[in-house]
Amino acid sequence: MTMEHYHPKDEMKRYVRAFIYLATKLGKEKSVAEDLWGIPEIKEVHIIPGKYDILAVAEVERKLLEPDSHNIYWFLLSRIEGIAGIEDTSTIIPVISMSHWSH
Image (cartoon, rainbow, N blue to C red; front, side, top):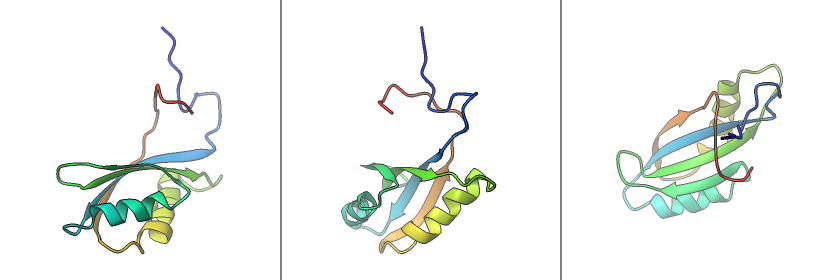
């Protein structure tokens, strides 16, 4: 069985992928999801049940001398912070990813 990795060990990552959970104000899920979908770095948006209302997948260009967590932090501050209706976020940055989705 062959597995394709999103980030092969011998190749420098060009992008940082992050999974961002967002809690919204009651009834604002759809408008927040639509605003997120308008951001080029956001590759997927899912409205989900549970503690968080939305799961967004972001792919942010990596800066050479900056840790991945900083890249995502600045992305969140500059692009997502201004969206009305967001009450809380939680971000997961994977170290190694495997996926059957197309690249």
